[in-house]
Amino acid sequence: MHETLEAVQMSSRKVVDGDLKVYLALLSLLLVMVLGKFSQILAAVIFSALCIYADRKAYIRIIRVPAFFLLGALVVILLTIDGKALVSFWIFRITDESIETAFSVLLRSTASLSVLSFLIMTTSIPEFITALSKLRIPKFIVEMLMLIYRTIQILFEEISKLDTAASSRLGYLGFRNMIRTASLLAFSAFMKSLRRSEIMEEALESRCYSGCYPLLQSRSRGAGISASIITAIVLAGWLG
Image (cartoon, rainbow, N blue to C red; front, side, top):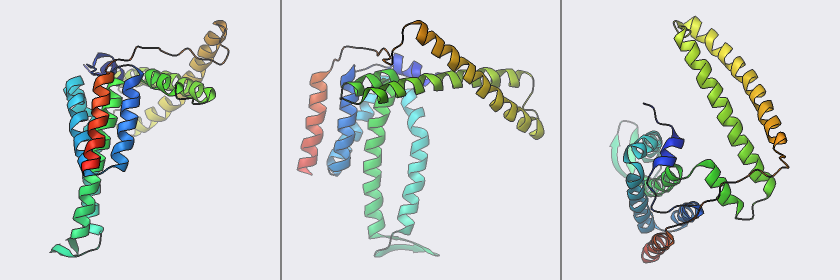
């Protein structure tokens, strides 16, 4: 059975919960961007462990695609940056500068990917928006984020239904049928999404919606662990 990202976010085990996990991830992401390699290595290890604890299988699925693109980027860096040649073959060469740059990119990217994976696996969009709203972000931005999130949900729901209907009628059998079905599906999804959006707007107005979308409130826990993680990353950066 296919497991959605929202299902992972709801079922994953959380050492840090509530708004605190959002602030922990954002602050850690900032630290790995500005501090040295030791802090990046430590952050990668810590947040990878948290992700594995949360949901090991989901973590592997999430990092698989970005890891593939990261590998391609590292190959390009190794072969394109000038410097003292260490290895040469045909028109390509690997230099001391390219190895140093690739290693730096690998550490920073791995640490950032681990932190973002932790945030993605443990935090739903409503929780993330609620945490942002407490950082004095303008209310209209928060409202726009919530409405966009809900609209995207509607769009994906309609596309899923239409795609299932098209597949059951062999709509993708053959190249010409696939093109025709895809165009009809896109048009139908657009029209149905507009109608569903109108229904959602009417539902909000019937519930006295005044431009302030209700936000999910949850209790934060794991302050001690969060403080320990941030302290460890800062100390590692200072020592490095």
